[in-house]
Image (cartoon, rainbow, N blue to C red; front, side, top):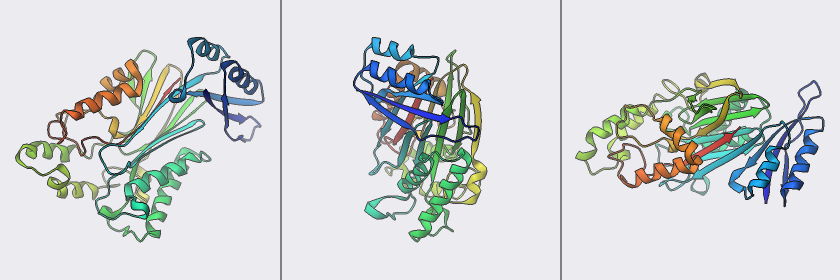
Length: 340
């Protein structure tokens, strides 16, 4: 069974757009015919194949690749719960728009309907706003931030206390024609891999947790307490600087000044990765930089699943988070790769 998604824009001079089209066909020739029909219509089309659901032969793949001059994007995604009681990450794929979100674990024990946490609600609310794909990325970010604020007020959250606020990071990209566009905030990132295998993080990188993990590394062997207990005061201290020294979508107006936004031509780009910090490689020294070079190498070797497996294998050797300082044995992962 093939799964293909088409994002078609009618070029009427006024930016009007048709809704996304979805096709499922039983054989490659039917799918190829469908794609060619769209391509020869009055549409500007972006095609992608969801390789998570892709079961085909090399012959079928060649048929698709030789369809036309249009690019066919291959998309892989991972959405996996860590060791927490609920997955606070969120991800979506909607036509030309792709997004990942990481809700921050709440600093209060309060939960809401069906036992949901503030982090879960923040990431899901923001993701559902972006998923509509009906505005500019910056406008969607502002709408998502406001929606989080509204939801907190409706549930009686004390929005004057930063430790009570729901919050989420976000990395969202739109790929249309020859243009890659992104908006990002927090420690969910956008990584671009070029045709020559070099790579670039095209957005801001948040580093608010370095001091906490450095302090944890120094005392980890002297306490039986887990990091969340041993470093409670430090964690609250960092959260108090939310949207002061680092940014997240938390319903606060100041969050918008921390948005990272940009555009690039897709020429010479082979892959775009967006991911939450669950896909960061474990490291023994919190002050050393993230090893995105190795992450890119692992991805090129075997896709997102290769990166995930590498991370999980290391984490299994340090379930108490002492050798490789981090907040959970296994963090939630939301990641999407787009191969152009």
